[in-house]
Length: 144
View 1 (cartoon, rainbow, N blue to C red):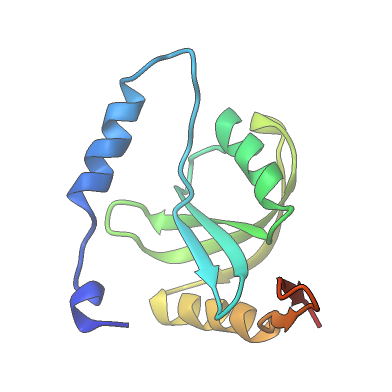
View 2 (view 1 turned 120 degrees about the vertical axis):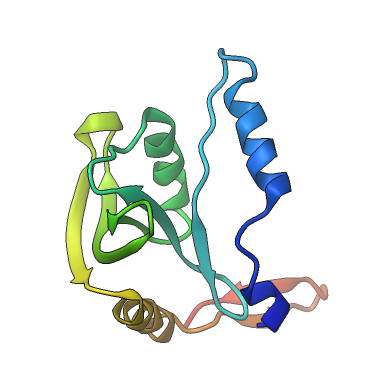
């Protein structure tokens, strides 16, 4: 990753975009997902962070359900939400609707290095998809 990209703290444009949507038409709903792990050819997992007392919202439960068709969804509860320091309680989202969501505790990681090791284990367990060209020249993805 480019060193300049690593130093970015966030996107002011993204923050304004999200804030404007929160104040927009109240008849519609939306949510954001915090992070998407990818390898060279596909999505490995979706990560969503929450403060230790935050609940899954109604719109998040809808998004998680659809995202599960693509890759696992992990909810990471952060012990110190303000500074985003550990411990990190990692749950795998199973299913559900709003407050009645089912999540399975996967692990607790005490610091960023341990969290990165957990992410690394997911990446290593998910091989890249192999692209095969059919006779028509269309790329088809084969997962092995």
